[in-house]
Image 1 (cartoon, helix red, strand yellow):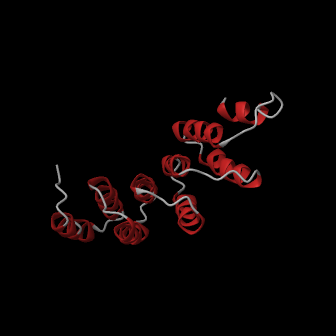
Image 2: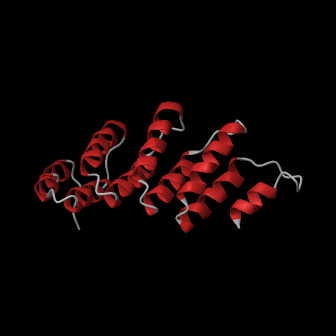
Length: 156
């Protein structure tokens, strides 16, 4: 529904903007429609509309929900290189996609990037620990409890 509204907006006299694209991206996230979410990013670029961090997070979450971890990492890399700058919510969405894809090595790399950009949260660590555990690397998952403790993040 949201995609058809977006596609018909031009004929209705509405000019699509970042708000309309963002609303559509949220709908894609809810529907786990990662292909449609990525198509939104392409459509925005063609119209020279700059994505917001929230919109990028929605697209990443749609990729994570659809277990499209490779696409999630590409979106995050693009945001890092060209903007908007990813925030902790965005990084956590990407980590969730890596957890679902059992991509423990990529999740550990993402944790390193998160530490350089932001202070990782319990969500960040939990998803990376989940990725390690789902990839049968429980030793690494346990090892991550030390940096959590060092950074004052409480496991609850």
